[in-house]
Length: 115
Image (cartoon, rainbow, N blue to C red; front, top):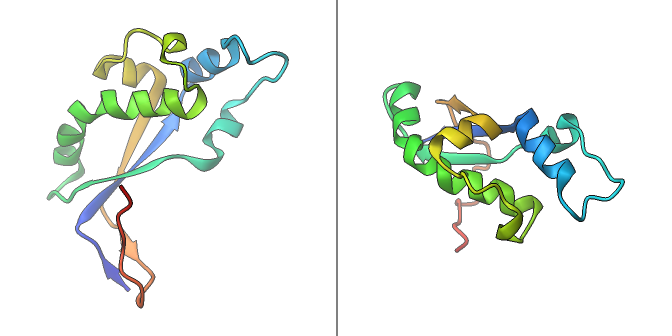
């Protein structure tokens, strides 16, 4: 078992994201809960830094990309997404938690990237 040279960022959906999901035109009677949305949280890998504050600083400009990906994971029609997709909007819809210890438990299979 070895650590990898990344910091993991767990993204959690907030109430404002839930409210957006539940008001979508095709939502109908199906209503989600925060528990349902956060059952399988997205995790992003960012460069390893001495501390998580540095990683959070690096992650800042990526917030818009992550926010758009979160919207797209629910609704593939950008016209129904909120127009404000700024770093500040990320903080309204999502939260990020940084984890400095990332362990690879698979010893006999290399990590592969899919593009």
